Each structure stands twice: as structure tokens, then as C-alpha cells.
Amino acid sequence: TDEVADEKLENKKLKVHTQLHVEEEQVQDDEADDMIMIQNLKDTLEKLTKVNGKLRKQREELTDEVADEKLENKKLKVHTQLHVEEEQVQDDEADDMIMIQNLKDTLEKLTKVNGKLRKQRE
Image (cartoon, rainbow, N blue to C red):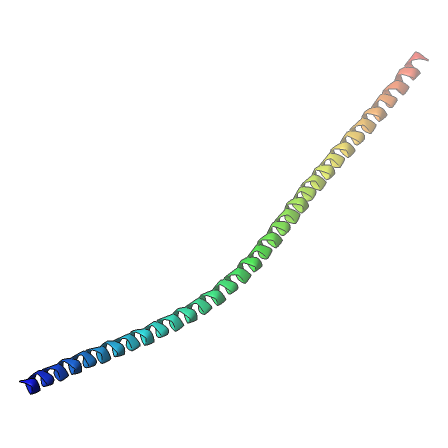
């Protein structure tokens, strides 16, 4: 019976040893999985950081483009306003020339009438 008890004890030790070995392998597998996951996360973070950098650069370029477009629009508005004002000035000058010509014509007519009236008085 001592032999049976010793053999049972040895079997129990072997079972415990085997169980510990299985658990140790499981821990190692888990650690390997964790290391792979950590590396994947690092790779993903690196890629996202690059994408973020590219997006920031694009945003800066777009911001510059928008500023340039706003400046061009402002220049165009000013140019258009100047053109409108220039046309208004030309229209006003044309109106003034017509008025001056009408006044000259009226002065000429009045001068003729005045001359006729002087002759009639004489």
C-alpha cells in the first residue's frame, strides 16, 4: 500500500507539474499575443500620426488657399466698384456735356434775340 500511495503521490505530482506546465505555456502564449497586439497598436498609432500630419498640412494649404481666394474676391469687388464708379463718372460727364451744349445753344439763341431786339429799338 505504501507503493500504491507513493505511486498516487507521484501521479498527483505529475498532474500538478503537467498542469503548471500547461498554465505556463498559456501565460507565454498570452504574453506573445499581448506583444503582437501592442506592436499592432504601435503601428496603427504611427500610421494615424502620419495621416494626422498630412491632414494638418492639407488644412494649412487650404487655409492659405481660402485666404488667397478671399483676397482675390476683395480685389475683384474693388475693381468692379471702381469700374461702376468710372462708368457713373463717364455718364455724368456726358450729361454735363449735353447740358453745356444746351446752354450754349440757348445762349446763342438769346444773343440773336437780343440782337434783333436792339435793332428794333434803334
